[in-house]
Image 1 (cartoon, rainbow, N blue to C red):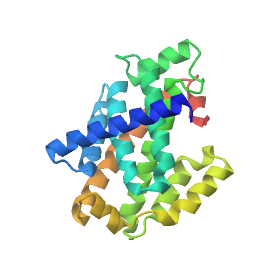
Image 2: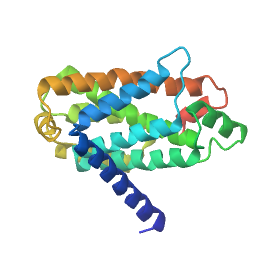
Image 3: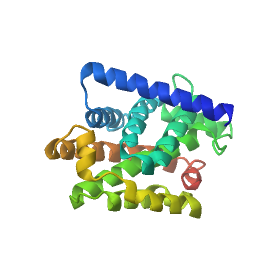
Image 4: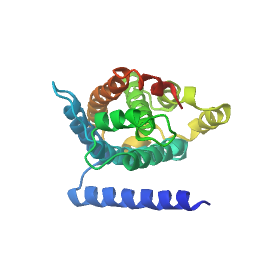
Length: 230
């Protein structure tokens, strides 16, 4: 096992413990935290002068990958993907960077296309946010106890095009191990009404966030092609 992987894994565990400790002190539920945090991020960009600091997005996403862990082994790839790219995003940005200043600087320095650049990490983070959004949308519209269909569709729309055959096959094979809607609700300490309300809040907020991130790349000629990179 490489030193970089071990270091990343230790950082991930430390971050998870910090978030859980904070929530336990406030007796806060995880789905409430992710819905509220995402709304705060959406409020930053849903204005006449949108502005979102990298460090705010990084903090919000750390809550996100803790939540993803509640889906068990089938979502391990998504959890580690988000955790890894959030750290790359943090490392690629300056302390006072907004998403815009980071992208513009990397374009100017001709490093935006590099594998671990902040810009490419931001795109990968956006895909993880979109995957959760689509999954919640499907769960809300279907109302089924099985969430396999919702997870499958969200993966197809967010990651499948950028993964090889082996990864796609592994994800497909892991779907039967997903928890049911009822079991997930119990793990999250929610009821049907509260879970539906919070999922819808996340869907609405994350749609604004994803749209904003996409617009930052679409509005820059040299950055738009980054959206199609793995």
